[in-house]
Length: 137
Image 1 (cartoon, rainbow, N blue to C red):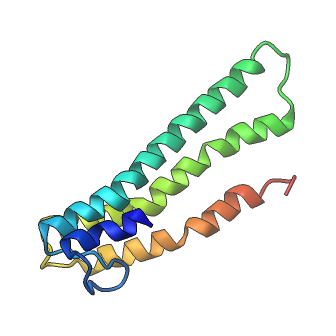
Image 2 (cartoon, helix red, strand yellow):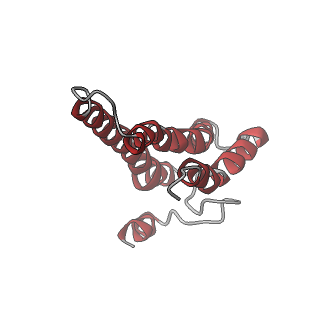
């Protein structure tokens, strides 16, 4: 809730089109976009990637001495690599679009908006495929 209120301090809310209500035409609006959404988003993606890497490494080392790894752990190790990748795939084009908006706010690029909307909308489906294709589910 606090993050939603911060742009009010600089009057940075306005009708900007499809997804975002934070003004793209002002320096304050651009800063809010990056400070309250894209910065934490990519920080979380980096943290998730690092956490999954550590978990994957620990699981592999725990079973390294064993003659064979139980199938459910081998499946878990394979699956762990997909979740950070899904986040990167889904949010890459939105980030590229926002960078383009920051550097050239008066020249919107339609195909970037199209890719942003398409890939951002795939996150739930890709998570369901990565999680739901497991025999345990």
